[in-house]
Length: 190
Image (cartoon, rainbow, N blue to C red; front, side, top):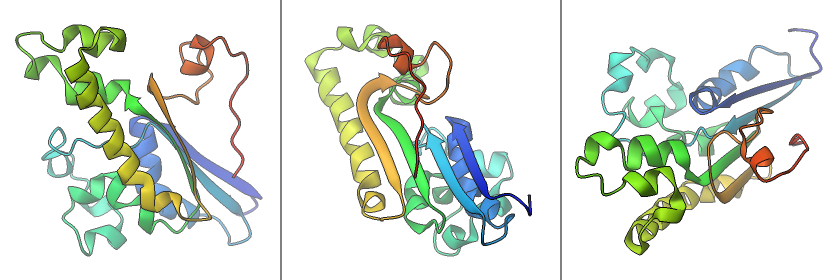
């Protein structure tokens, strides 16, 4: 790696979160002359209640960025909204404001919906009631608030769309880009 001219760390979903958590450390593996960038796709997880206890359970406290753990509790440092504004290395974030994984698994999981009120909406946003759409709009607004300060940095970039999607940059034909009938692969240049 000491001869690399460029390096890109990227990940999707949990991998996007891991890219954010380990990115400055990854940058330090290369000489200063190497251009190092990070792409996090669908790594902005917002529901801290769902992950309560995960830092202790998985023993990741010592692997979290010290820049964060020096002033926040370890669980808070597991969430990108507490990290992205402190990162030293350029970061590009791709995320759906209506992240389908978070909607299905975090916001309205079946375990929290025994009556099935969210069932149809969770699987097809076209079947959401006006009240459910207002709730989802609140989630979108929260996502935009989380990235507001981050977006002011000249070294960073982001693409937050209002699609119902998760992991949008892979080349799998199941991604959003192919579902829209687009036949190109997304290339991001920072």
